[in-house]
Amino acid sequence: MAYTNLVETQRKYFRTGETKPIKFRKQQLIRLKKFIEENREALSEAVWKDLRRRAETTEAMEIGMTIQEIDYFLSNLDDWAKPTSVEKTFATALDKPVIEKDPKGVVLIVAPWNYPISMVLLPMIPALAAGNTVVVKPSELSENTAATFEKLLAKYFDPKYLAVVNGGIPETTDLLKERFDHILYTGCPPVAKIIMTAAAKHLTPVTLELGGKCPVVVEDDADIDITAKRITWGKWLNCGQTCLAPDYVLVNSTVKPKLVAAIRKYIGEFYGSDVKASKDYTRIINQRHFDRISKILDETKGATLIGGDRDRADLFIPPTVLDVEKSDPFMHDEIFGPVLPIITVKSISESLEFINEGEKPLAAYIFTRNESKVKRLVRETSSGGVTVNDVLMHITVDTLPFGGVGVSGMGRYRGKFGFDTFTHEKSVLHRGFFGESLLSSRYPPLTPQKLEQLRRLTGKRVSLNLVNMATIPVVIASFVLGMIFQFLFRFSA
Image 1 (tube, one colour):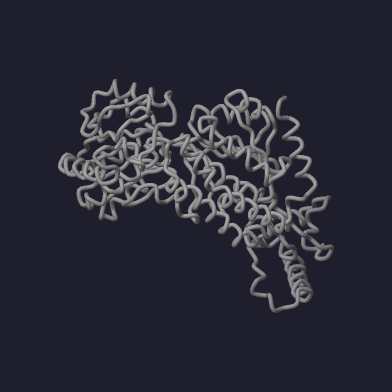
Image 2: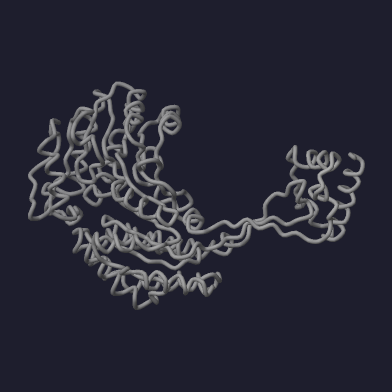
């Protein structure tokens, strides 16, 4: 197979144990940070060529975020990687049970095109921090960024440790034939099914970061002006090509005209009277995606509340707001573009019912001052995450896990949650050669007396915590406990 040599070379290197020491892992994170800082202009320029997104935006949204993530790992890696002591049971009172943190091995990261820098680096950081080797497959749709990664990363890392594989469907198909120890894929559900099918042949665990139709519930007690401002920012950021972008709005008939008017106002403030000329407005990634969105716009039965002319040659679709019914073509699948449908509802209950009728989204948003309504959204719906009175912002909190549920994905990363994703938590029980009488009843022949002792020992869970005995010498503590247990067994007999 095309990539057998690459994967086996990484596996052979991983088995040397060189990637496991914490000092080595930190050195690689520092080197990765150096790569980002020394090539930030080249990376931003590549994104501009792919998405027409201005460099300053890419710097703030993608590059700064990855540097912050590396710093967070460098500050916490020692603590996250150390063995974790766990509570003892009655039967292990004289033993030492711990959880050891093992790297999984060779990791494959399949990245998307919409945030082509951070969606490569944010999973890569925890994978390397956990002590793994990594193969990265950037999206072929963001071809300039992918080529920049392939060219520049090779100057900082040996491919036996970190390698970039570029190409389209044939190359990805060949990669998936190989046996990896973990696969993280960010993208859409149809491709995720292909990833899972390939992974199943090797029983490889997967993390899937997908998308879905992220709903926005706007209640009449919300600050409509601020609500519109935040929705406008989150929806048309990156031209709507964001997995966490508001996909549709649920609002009552009284609030709807006020909300639409405020959205129109902020579109003007953000992008000017000529959106096409704005340097802050990104473009659709390619003509295929342009045609996909345009086709649905031609089929929609909804009234256009905000919108304008499209330009296929420029891959330009303006901010568009539609007044639609629940059966509208735009309500079938994730839009992933600059179109925002608005659906009229009568109550919070109707909004929650509508959300629950669809697949579980990557995120759900609600704007309200009513805490009971917030609790209802959180408790009565299922989504990867929730932001209250804003959109997208929960992904910026590196102490929160980022991930989906159901069709919107499985697994999670960011911060310690990413470290845990790429780490195998190995259960280890350390035992000595003393205290043999404590479990002597387990040995055959199993007499009625021994069976009764086993029943007493295992029939009820009794936990013991020796932390409060830390001031007592271990030998004395073990001896005293051993004597007590032996006395209890003799007495029970």
